[in-house]
Image 1 (cartoon, rainbow over the protein chains, first blue to last red):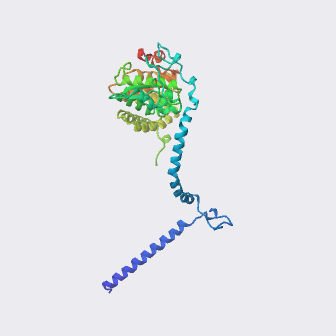
Image 2 (cartoon, rainbow over the protein chains, first blue to last red):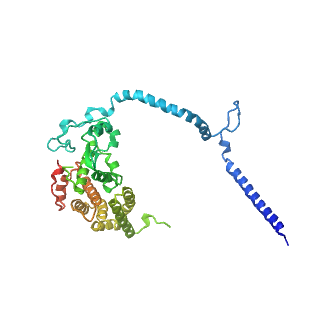
Image 3 (tube, rainbow over the protein chains, first blue to last red):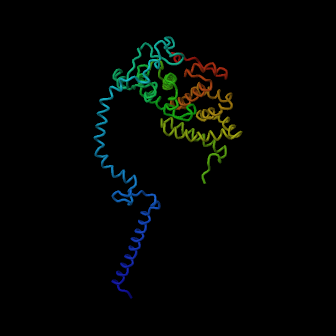
Length: 236
Length: 153
């Protein structure tokens, strides 16, 4: 019979052998992972250079090696770029823009005083002068806060200022003061898909229209939404 | 094994369409736009498949023009408009002109009315976005719709 000491020694030997098997299996696995089946494609250093004929690192390794350099130079480069933008920006802003042509704006004569539409379609804010601004901040500074429970709503979406001129988007004609719930209701409609919008989100579908069509669509949407929520569309 | 839409029988597709439209209506009611759009995306391939199945798929869509749910009627009419406008236009006209409240919330009825109206705009080639311009075309289909002066102001 085996005594208790012998049993302990026996078990320890079994465990050591198992551990050795695991270690050897891991070592083999490491060799498999490390093996590169495309070793013949790996680039070598050119002959005549230090370490000529030796394997050289792939691009990723090279990129990793220049990362510290980029991290050291990055903040300086950003500061330099900001400084250049600060100095050159005003000159660039003064340059004539492609969209700055007068012909792209609807002329004042186009607004029909009876129907308040641009040719057969668009409308003008009755009795109000049309003021155009270069950006939303200037427009909002002019208009001031919308008031309690109310928000400013762009009739043609402000994200389209890259497509149309910013002066056309940020004008007193294109912004309207609406109750918050009506504004959210309209935004909900603009974010939904439907069969009438070719199965895409309405705002992306509408953004393909001309400015005038988008404007008239926006007015129609506001009036319909106002009716649905029980507001007087003539007195929002 | 998962069956694709084209393997499913027409009845199962119609049942799935009605179920998705009902879920979409509820998503619009709670103003959950992402969910409503996801559910809409699920209805699109079903409707396309039903349109392709002649005649039973198209017959099923025409039968859905009488469905109790305005959302189902609308999605069916949007497709039927392609081959039988005489059947679809009265349905779209009623969806736009009839008051769907109080059974539907303002968001739900607004969604149905807006879609119906714009499908009619497109069908009649109206680019003014003025619903008063739908009065005359809809009269030909027996739908009387009062003139609303504030849309011309």
